[in-house]
Image 1: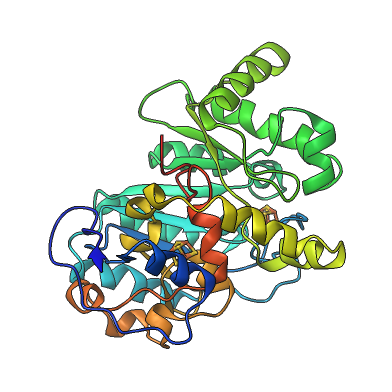
Image 2: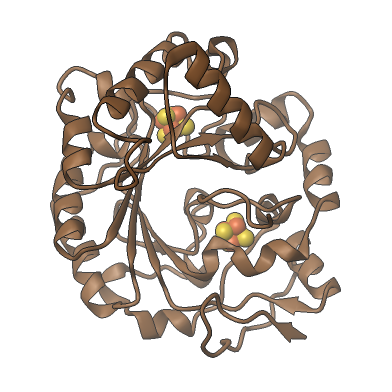
Length: 337
Ligand code: SF4
Ligand code: SF4
């Protein structure tokens, strides 16, 4: 079998044989490929499932009543890990709405002190929630890269997926960020995230970005840095919707039929470590939502370091086909340009 080199060089770990193989592993085997993990470069923290929204496609099934919230002790263990993994250059904070979790600002300031690139996956409406009026300024002062969900540039489509009134509040949040220099100054990147409304692959990222830029500028005087398109993963609330409407099988066929080997070198599980709010480790945020532990095991961040991590195989499942369909998909957008 052909080992895919790690993202930035180094050895390819020896992987255990998986039996039985899922549809994703079968596709890899058919193409004579295995997944190899590289150095961990991105620490992606899912700090809880509490959110001020309840979007239909949410792969985290987040909402206001979810009790899962990061504690201060686990937040400290997340920061301590950085000293044992010097190859990490980015802290990517997600949720739920990560800003609702009490240690959020502490994590940001600790990462900033270590000169890491910091990403906040922000739902925009949190910026106008009572009690969070100073959040946008805090993010700007700490040079946090904001990655914000906006699945369309029209209110009808956004409100249908994310709830009534969400579009108007999202535009208000974007305007607040623009006023601080986000999406305008190179130091303050503001990326928007698009995901399809239904069971189809996203359209080409570059042309959709042009449409977004034109419409948001002309209709709302809003600027942003880049548009990221993400394929809906067949998990969580989106999967339940597909099951209810009898569309799950058809969607899996779409993903399988669009399998693209060129997406594999960029898969985020190859250089990202995903950590849940209790400190347990996963190969990516999607696996985390499926309760699939790192390399199929239950491992905690307090016991992990960069070297140990390199030796562990990546746990996969049928849902991985969402990352390799078409132009590929990751938290940073398409994988094949
Ligand atoms: S998609 Fe984002 S904003 Fe919507 S419920 Fe899930 S975590 Fe909250
Ligand atoms: S779902 Fe996770 S483990 Fe599977 S290919 Fe995508 S990033 Fe990798």
